[in-house]
Image (cartoon, rainbow, N blue to C red):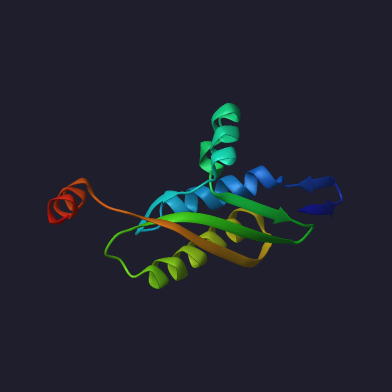
Length: 125
């Protein structure tokens, strides 16, 4: 985002928007974790930007588009979690940056089980 003011220009970096989106996503009920590819996970470990794992953004002067890769908790309706996630991320980014979020795309990469649920599944097999 770039905004011309009488006192100067305000620019919000992609990393700032990605951090806000990542934190909002992790605070959404039903989200177990963010997901990242192997190369993305390695890059995040090296750079220390784990909050942005599974988040990619495109920030223009007035708008932003956000892509999220997530892992949901087992037993919760995925479509409902994703709608709430989209709303939470959109609201957080718009409120904190003033950018118009034009889209929040969500890719569900997996389902997380609690340890006791995994034990029960392994006993059934």
